[in-house]
Picture 1 (tube, rainbow, N blue to C red):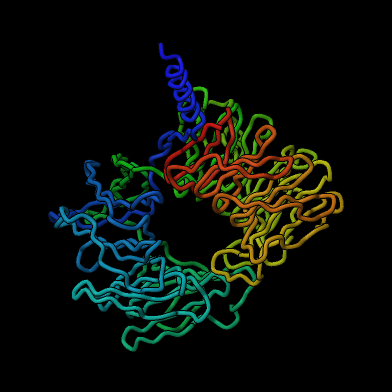
Picture 2 (cartoon, helix red, strand yellow):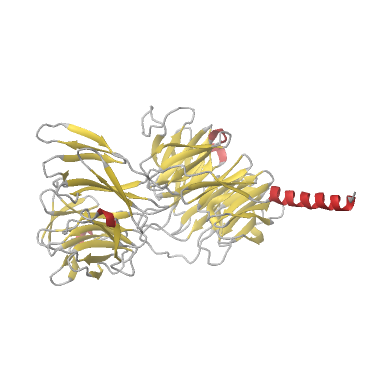
Length: 606
């Protein structure tokens, strides 16, 4: 027998087997949530001489879709857009076609009920500079007007000729032209924000605009954005802070009350008094009878925004717009869609006594979920689950970081509200379920984006982001790394570690060291000397809040790969390149790391 040949064969086989066993084992765990984000509902023509209800859904991991529903039967037809993840602007045009205005592109989309086979068509992009079309209204001149971001412009489209016009900035420095309404005089009123709110009127006949906001209101603290709307009396009203104003041509009159916004009404008088994802209610005002109907649609999947460890060895996550919460049980090998909350998305979460704190945008609202209760009922009462305990405090809008600190307190770091600089770090007491300390402007003009508690020193370490709330421009050159001492309640260290860094996206303390990231670099920080001990390259750009301890090593995520870090010397080892872009994290459970990519939940067995 040829023993050397047999030995060689088995040796080669073992090498091949070992390479297969040690190869990265990425696994898609499917799409946990398929709800779609409902952006709005309108009444419009059905293309056959009657009427239909139209519901506009976003999908951040795909494209938006429109659902046309028969108000009498609930029968539905779904039309998927060729481009655009979502649309705020939604209107029936003067040509009896349905128009949508997208974000992430500022495209005008059109659906013709008389030609449904064409589906949703892309009309065009009215301004090269803009990313969002916020609202539509139909002008007296037959043009369709829209307000924009990020240069606070007004644009318009003529359905008769197909012409599009960029009418320019409505404010020289602000970024948001957030709302608009056409008055009975044909003039277009635009609400501006988010730092110095303004009220602008545009005259289509002269193509000129000017501010009509009363001088005494300008720059009032906390008043960042003017909102305009057309009311049931056909007039336009503006709201700014505590002020309510009626617009009579270019004259502004303060008023105490205003009519309600017009109801969505069918031609036979029935009113749409309620709608959400998959159902609506019609009221007959003559009889008072209310009829509820349901409709069906098919969501492709909602984008996962955050993933984290939860009670009972489960992995929890939240989708974005809509905010839906799910969990994955590694032992059972299945996902469960738990339910929704009224925010945009959960930004951070933390386990406490086998319950889960979930803090969401906007307003950094803190909620406590008990998985031992076999139901999901969001509210603020004792029979709710999760129970909402309200906002964290001043300076908190997007609660990016949440950790357990000294005395079982939770520390929350946030980005500030729209139009403001300087985020905050709050200290939440789980016993009383309220904020007991709050540090606004902990880092001057910067957000707090990562936190870690280093037990030996007793310090809270963290990283800032050199940006503020929506509509602001950065005033600081670079982000900083800091150390906060809870005993003296102030920072004892504050300095940039990486030249020009925009943020320190993930920070963790382990083995008497603090590890933080900026861009594609890992920094090992010595809390005793308050100096960087070593710097190591990462296999890509770090994903936010996606670095944590697993046994005697750290596990982290970049947008392209999973890596581990030796706690002793900081050596970084790439564990595998993901099949798809890694969008968010981060949980390590049962020997695997979990993350989100688009609408899919993924894991890599370590």
